[in-house]
Amino acid sequence: VSSARRVTSLVPVCIFYGERNHSRSAWFTAHGVRIIYYKPDWEWKFRDATKNAALKGLSATRSPLYKDAHTLVSTFMRIDLPILGFVDHYVLYTDVDVLFLRDITLNDFRPLPNTFAAGTEAVDQASI
Image (cartoon, rainbow, N blue to C red; front, side):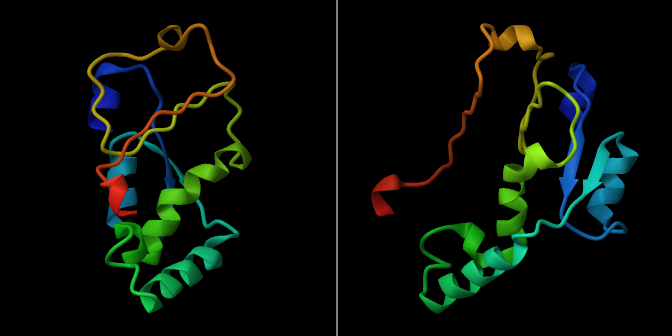
């Protein structure tokens, strides 16, 4: 958030899964981030998945996300971006730990694709 506010023209928005009075949402607000408080309809499915993973002993071996239902739900809320009411033609989604070194504009993605995604995780794929 800090680098996005400092070196870009982006308007940071946080999709927040938690209470309005949480210290994290207060920090975002204090730093000029727009907050969308959101609880997805499918939350219960991910809570069940977390419980099932723990029962099968997968929570410690397959993904750190299975250790905590709140983290799992928060991670996958991005799939609901299209239904959250954004009126912008383009939305750039990033995790909070992205460091921006310069401004980013649509010209950085030309020719504009229909969709664009990039990502990596530090996971040994051979163990999955």
